[in-house]
Image (cartoon, rainbow, N blue to C red; front, side, top):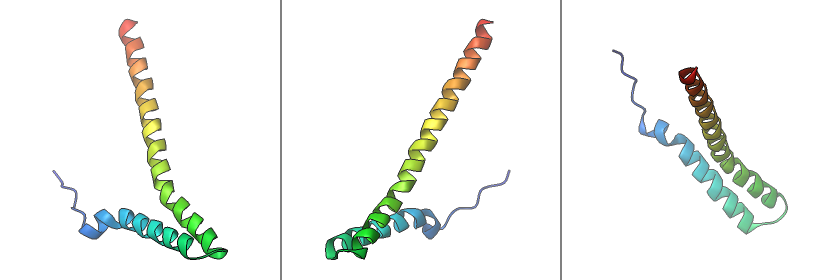
Length: 79
């Protein structure tokens, strides 16, 4: 039996750390200036929301797939 190699601390926290840095940078840019800083602020804050949306979409598709599988199993049992 092969064991999956353990992730290092940096590998484990790379995505959350990147999202935290993007969020803080976006908030600081938004508070300290106008013009291009506002645009950069919005882009950084939107980028930090994309993984959350992807997780919800993946969860929804997984729940939908499981519901379909459960329904088809039920049909087989009653046939």
